[in-house]
Every structure is written in C-alpha cells, then in structure tokens.
Image (cartoon, rainbow, N blue to C red; front, side, top):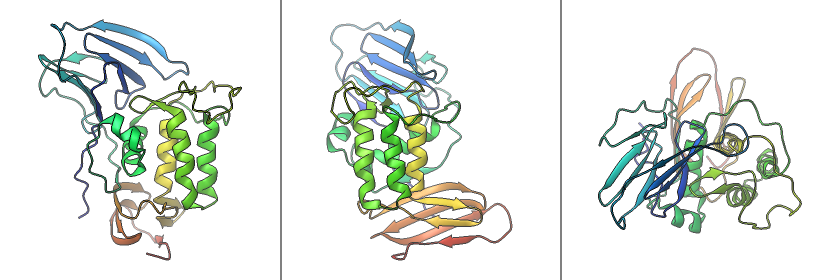
Length: 289
C-alpha cells in the first residue's frame, strides 16, 4: 500500500501573515492583536470583518499555521492559542471538532523540510510548493470556469501551453513565474503583482475574475503532470518534469477507480488500482517506466 506520511501545514511567524481558510474563499490576515477576514470569491478582495484579540505585552513565539489536513487556521504564541474555522468562528478549544475536507488526493515529491513559508518562498523548490498548491487548490471552491486569458491569468495560460506542448523540461520555469507574480504571503492568490517583479508588462490590465482560479486551475494543471485520462486510457506521468525524479500521489480519482502511484529515478516503482466498476482500462506508461 502506498502512503504519504508528511503533513501539509505551512506556517509563518510574521505578524500580518495571510492565508486562505482551507475549503473556503476566505482569506485571514493575522496580527497578534487583530484578525481581518476577506472574501476573494467575487473578484476583488473584500474586507468583511475585523476582530480585536486581547494580548498582554509583546507576544513571543507568534505563529500562524494553515492546516491543510484538518481544514482550519491555527494561531498561537506565549499565552495565546486559537483556531479559525471555515465558518469564520474563532475557538480556543484545543482540538475543535472540524469537518475534515472530503477531497483526499495528495501529492508528495520527496521534500521533508519544515514548511516555514518565508523559507519555502526563498528556496522556490517546487518539490515543496506543488504538494501545498495542489492540496489547497483542490480544496478551494470556485464558481464557474475561468474564461480570461489576460493579466495574471496569461501566466496560467503559459503553463497550460507548456504542458500541452509536452516539454516537461520547460514547465517549471512557467510555473515559477506564476507562483512569484500570482501569489503573496502564504499562497494567497492575487490579480495584481504588488511586488512589481517585472514578470508582467507594466500596462497589463488585471483580470476581473476571482484570483482563486490561480489555485484551482493551477491544481488541475499540476495534476495533469502526473496523470491524465481520456475515455478508457489513463496516462501515467505524461508530463513529468525532470526535477521530480521521485514522488508519490495517492487516492487519485479516475473513472475506473482510485489510483496510487510511486516512482523513483523517474521510473514507476509501483501502482495500485482500487477499481470501482468493471470494464477495460488501458494504462500508458512513459517509455522510461
């Protein structure tokens, strides 16, 4: 049986850290004595609530953690501990009852480093970034399909074009451009590159659709690097970037059932299919597998 042991719980010690509440369109901005809530679901980032938090003196050990396993945001420090739930409720219970996310597909690319976000961003190693992006994007609800290919969404389209061209050695370059320009703080998507990195033209118009598409569509593209399905044919590792020489992907939902994958040295090590219906299925493995 193929399993993924490492947990996806990125964190930051910086006051003012922002992250999405898993499974929602809500962003939370956390300071030691203040919490702000924003809704990203309707295009522009909209402030919807602001709550003061009582603290005494300088708070040591301040930490904001986005728990992608349980589906909440946890905040703690010296004399402070609470959880922000998907309902926007703030609770101080040590282990609050939370309905776990129903989505189970997970990706691991062999990185076991601490998920302190400032270091993740500095390293810009997609063996760390993609599992987080895939999980968060898969959990994020987005209404409607993405229609725009302008502004920040042009970088998403660039990633898609590289995948469609089957040039895996060039794929991560485009994803890096999207990652740097399209996100701030802890994987919070944005319509405008507020860091002015020069990745997009200065006169580039921001898109009018919700930036959450960068997460959800990005997750869909990430998935297509490892598995695709067309009718009864399932392609395994069809667009594997050379940087991902080893990894695991589990509980992949296909028409035929659930698929688990494990590869090493760019070759398939094992695969498990838990079928849910009878019928013929063809698996297409890369020539190196």
